[in-house]
Image (cartoon, rainbow, N blue to C red; front, side, top):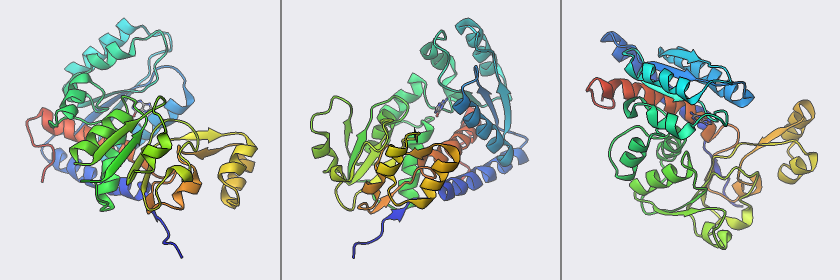
Length: 312
Ligand code: GUN
């Protein structure tokens, strides 16, 4: 009988990280410092509202001050730049998060560059991207940093492993590849123009899937025993798709009946079965993103005051 894969429980790892961050917060509070996060949410994108609510709630749980700023959909780039400049100058704000996506008429690139790199808790500023690229300490994007935490805390080897990242976004794919490289993995980055993707992924010891296409990585593309990290969150609303990915899964079928949709990652659940370890969707990498945002906020609060990144 083949060995059952190990489920990498993102919720449990996120709880562990949040407990550590909470401890760091209490040490800062003893010194009269309360870390503060400003979250900017523009317009009424339902998914963004859910994420932002969760970010603000988690701040409260860990003793981090948070301020939600919600300009109207009609806000201009200039008005947003003014808002960011004010937050950059505020002593009680350590982190500034601009929830994406922004309305089309707002210049996202210009805004992300306007955030002080020292308060860039998303790690999206070119200065922080450059620091990551050159292996210097800085604020790192939350989801990729969460992936490294999952691998390390599960004691899965990274150094010397063949890691294949599928997807080259600035937010996940590229920084994930750099973080894996900094941990001495042998890294390949694949994307929509890659020839014979399956031949590349079949050589992987670790696959990071971040392409935003439901069940895109199939079992035939995976070497038995590989570690699978699934960053995708895709909503299935078609019953045929649900049956294709979750045949025989009564729990998923019940969810679909009740809600009219279920979530699947970028990796076909059939591939999980032949892996040695995998992050489920939901309950995998997604859970880590907010925990790492909290970690970054406290890190920013410490570094801005000339302290080391962590107290120990
Ligand atoms: N929208 C979706 N994911 C993210 C994220 O990690 N940060 C921000 N700022 N916006 C997002």
